[in-house]
Image: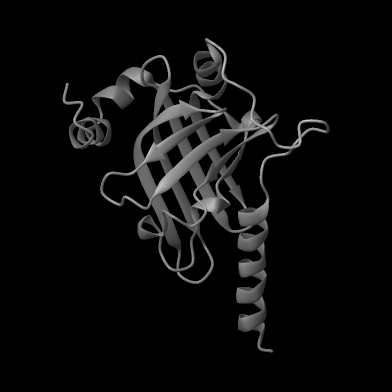
Length: 176
């Protein structure tokens, strides 16, 4: 096997391991979701709102999360795979709280369902491959893993005035 083929197989193995690695399930819960409580979304937003930038293993990741009401967030995610031509994924929009995660259902690409799922120490971007239309050939949203320790303060006022935010508001029917 050529060195290039080995490298591609190794990258594919990383993507597959990320794709099948779900959030940890504690003993005794058997994966059953807990019923949401009043204030869960607000507490979770306070815990994850901010800007994340991580670069490991040849993959650069950035994620921005901004509070947008009591139970929803605005997000921007960008992932760049430096192997094989810098393929990337990029998506922004609004996500609503649902069972411990924020879920985005894309209007332009109806099959795209993206989750921002916080765990004890990290935040995962999960799509099960459904948002591939927003990715290059050698990139995947599932590579989006952000340690909560990487969270930085966000300039919310500047983001709310940005062209990207205003565009996403207009596209979602929430024209200011």
